[in-house]
Structures are given as C-alpha cells and as structure tokens.
Image 1 (tube, rainbow, N blue to C red):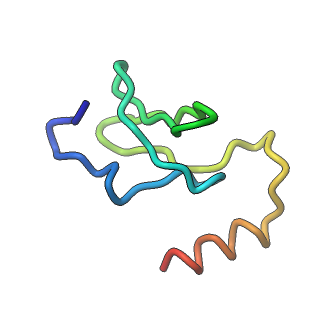
Image 2 (cartoon, rainbow, N blue to C red; image 1 turned 90 degrees about the vertical axis):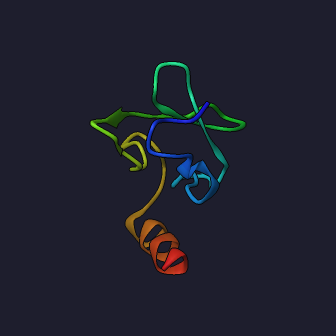
Length: 68
C-alpha cells in the first residue's frame, strides 16, 4: 500500500531494529518481522523507539549518526 504522497518506505526503516517498514491498512507504518507499529499523524510518521524498549541513549545516538 502507498499513501498519496508517494512510497517513502523505500528509504525509511524501523529506528529500533533497522527492519523494513510497510504501510498498514490503517495508514500507519509497521516494521517487517516484529510488527512494531509507528503512528502517522497528518502525514508525519512518529519514528521514535518506544520508551519501554531496552535501548540506552548512546545506542540511539550512534544509530542516528550512522544514518546521517
């Protein structure tokens, strides 16, 4: 499924696992494999790791640095 703004799933990935993201029927993004769901509100995806995950800040910062 694609949204009206094009399919950005080709360049987006799950911030926690790096898994591919796909559009769900409800318009949100879902990670392939573990089915983590990321809400899309007004066309903006909330791609933040859930607070209940065991990721420390350093690991998240390293992931962001690698991406950019």
